[in-house]
Amino acid sequence: MDFTPFILSFKLAALTSLILCFISLPLAWYLSQTQSKVKPFIEALSALPIVLPPSVLGFYILFALSYNSPIGAFFEDTFDVKLVFSFTGLVIASCFYSLPFMLQPLQNGFESLNKNMLEASYIAGKSTFQTIFQVALPNMKPALLTAIIVTFAHTVGEFGVVLMVGGSIPGETKVASVAIYEMVEIMDYKAAHIYSAMMIFISFSVLLSVYIFNAKHNKRFGL
Amino acid sequence: MIEIQIKKRLHGSSGEMQLDVDLKIQEQSFVALSGKSGSGKTTLLRILAGLEEAEAKIIVSNATWQDKNTNLAVQKRDIGFVFQDYALFENMTVEQNLLFVTQDKALATKLLKMTELYELKDRYPNSLSGGQKQRVSICRAFMKKPKLLLLDEPLSALDTAMRHKLQEEILLLHKEFQTTTIMVSHDPSEIYKLASRVVVLEEGSIKEDGKPKEVLLQTQGSQKFSFSGELLEIKKVDVIYVAVVAIAQQIVEIVVSHQEMQSLEVGDKVILSTKAFTPSINPA
Image (cartoon, rainbow over all chains, first blue to last red; front, side):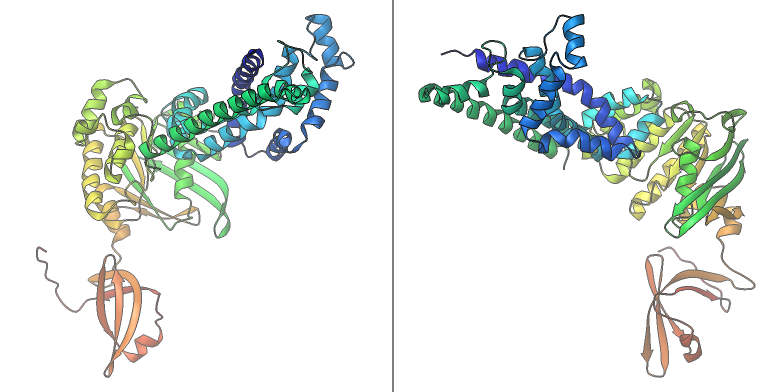
């Protein structure tokens, strides 16, 4: 049994979650605190991946990353990095695709915090940075955990965008979901069963642990 | 001396209004800020703290916090602030809540001992009662040794007994630290007990300003006794009418004439007064 596709899926999911965490934290904080008129535009734009067919998203990302576009050409000429049909390209595509799954729980978490508590931190002389890391995030652990886990799980489960942007290069872009698709195509049902059962088992365990943690956390804080 | 001049347009519940306040406050004094809800009291405190923008001139003992050219960030202002809903850091213990402000363990211990909270120092806020939470919040506000302490209806969510206890503690802390304090309050007995001056806001401007005794005593002319209350019911009993009035936590019955009855309506705010007898006072 070849587990490379699984390892690739988890590597992709871990990297995507990490990168999105850095991007989404400041953005979610901004959206939770601002009363600017651009807020709904950013919210709508960042939620697009939820409603768009993966093929649409995949098509545009493929287009933007290919050598025919300035972005793709720049990366290939300057860094000698090919963005399509490569692992790097997959990470970039996944970041777009999974952005709302990281951003929205974080924004909801920030918005659910007691505004006075954040102000009390400013009054105590703490900067926004200190307030986010010492007061805001520790008081919204369930939201933080939900954001990371759901992003991770969603990236593991992604199929359409990956197939369009990455293709199916073994060890490079052939992730678990694509591998299962190919097994079914060549009628290797036994392998497809094993892979699919593993996907279900892993996903269920991850989600179960999130719900158990959140229930315990809410009980401790009397919510 | 603390000088405050504030102008700001507010969109209150009763439409647009102009907050326009000009105050000079003696250092180390205790000022109560009173007035109906929506009169701009909380906004005034928030502007002083730098939490809300306004056209303002704020000078606190020769340091300019805000004027045309300066506008200190909330972090740079020497204030302590106590919110009505405590606003404690839920992820920290009682002691950590205090030490988060400044790492002054001696001061934290002193404050916690003064307010009988020392035994609870390792507890988390969610395991405390409302009164205990508010005491932690008050202690936290003193950790910075602020020049100006702002209390936004700190006791209004607590029951009467707890209120009395906290009033004593606020008084104790004020005597100890001599911090200039502005407290929003609706409770006349609280204002009388704590404040040396009371400022009443109405529709964003100062309506009354003076000693609590002068402002709060509502008797006019030769009346000796006067209470304000709410008319709950008018009953006809034989040939007379009896009005039931709620005054603070008490319900009283008063005989009213037919003539008086016609000018009254259930739900009215009424003033009860008498001048005809000498009241007696006895321990309850």
